[in-house]
Length: 403
Image 1 (cartoon, helix red, strand yellow):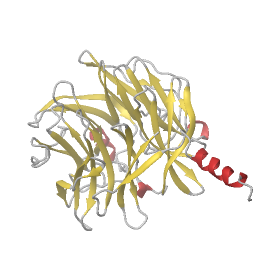
Image 2 (cartoon, helix red, strand yellow):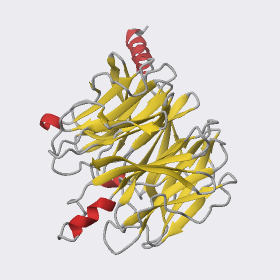
Image 3 (cartoon, rainbow, N blue to C red):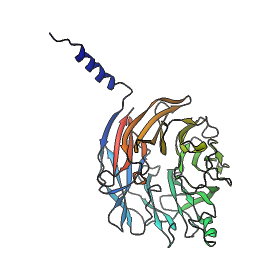
Image 4 (cartoon, helix red, strand yellow):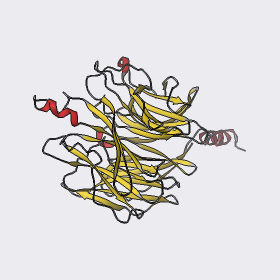
């Protein structure tokens, strides 16, 4: 009779691989043909939308979207298309749903003049759940051919849509002196609201000097909307800051954490934020002290104060973060980690005590710009990741997973 111990050992090893620490994953094929720049949005009634740029040919791009239903993406629908769009790996379009859970808004970037970075934010609205879309309008009223982008759309409690963006209207003064990309003048952070008719309200400057090309993010807290972004001091310190709207008034900008990262150029690596009531979680990348780090800070008072920035990466992060809150009140953060020349999209959970357990790798991807910024969202009792894949052709892939 053969010794059964080796067989038993194999069974025990397999059971160990299926431990509670492992991830349950399922890739969900998307309707994307050839395209990238994905984004995800979770509506107030729990419906999850994917938007992306479809590359129709060398001169034409289209903004499409799909709805996730029973773990399957619907057929893609087109919102708009153009031959004069500004399509960028880091500054990508988005779709958001108004508080009525039916009306929708989408944004993209469209060239406004001959300069490389002369483009406007364009917004279109659908009142019938995405069947028809309005002619586009511009949420910024300066009328100056300059850089406007890195938009975040956020449904507001008053039934409108809140929008925040990077605004380069003040950079034009430097171009007259021969500057490039308008860096002689300061990029500003601005915001406005609009309703389902496209009427604009409350356009305001939130910060008069910020980093030139890092993403913004926004969330709704119990006190109102907040915006996180990368600031830029006169000494070229580019740390993550927050502004909050309290009783109809925007606060002065305050740092989420003082990393004191001094860098002469923009790192193209913006923060991400998630909120529920008074609980707020912010994730970001920093290169302070010549050391690359991904950090997460938590707030229990709607952003008035934060914990220290907890390090969550595994030593070689490239940033490109996103973050959501779990049902248990912890933060789940995603980022891109470099491993032997390739990229791994990893996730980890964080609470007030710091990082919890080991990081988990979701997928392997490229570290090139073409791979873009992975997007993380909650979906039913799990989570969904969207990213740009360029293995055979440039396309968008999505992965559902549970912790």
